[in-house]
Length: 232
Image 1: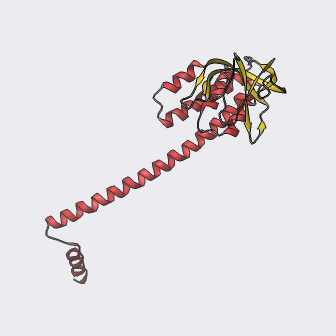
Image 2 (image 1 turned 30 degrees about the vertical axis):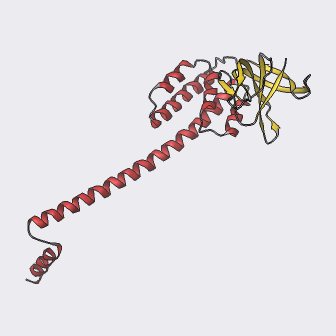
Image 3 (image 1 turned 30 degrees about the horizontal axis):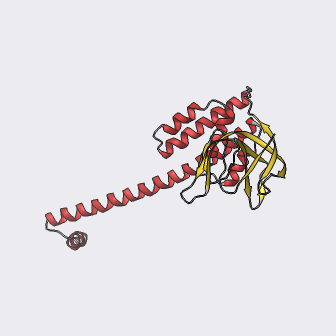
């Protein structure tokens, strides 16, 4: 199938994701979103449905699209207007592997992300969304929604056409993220613990000073008293 090619130099759109982009889709109902970095096109893109088209406040074209499924980029030819490109796309629809390894990866992914959400203090909305995703391929793609992952990591996830391989990548990325958050949490706890200790010591010293003043003593008189006792 041939689609209008829409290069994406910044955004990366995954299947099931709705995004509003500064792109000109013309009269097309479906387009092919293909990431591009440093002038080089990625191997895998996303076939997307055009939901709405319009103009930005500055007058430029914008379109709201919904990612449908992955596609492997093929040969491209110039469009009739001479400016656009149409590209042959080999479309890929996620299957639903039913083997134990995939089920284990699915359980592990959910568990790791739940730990991450707990550390971040999620109000429950993201966890509820995660529980609503049943398809293993779509579940792995939720890692692509995380702002903590860079473009290279997201492209690696997008490039994985095999669902089980994609889950393995998603679990690996989330494990690394969890480990980083755990280290930050320990450092923060150590800093807070140290600060609390300093505060306790400070208040104890102030209390000792207050007691000495109440007794009509100062530090020098106490030292002198002990020296006299030692001399005796």
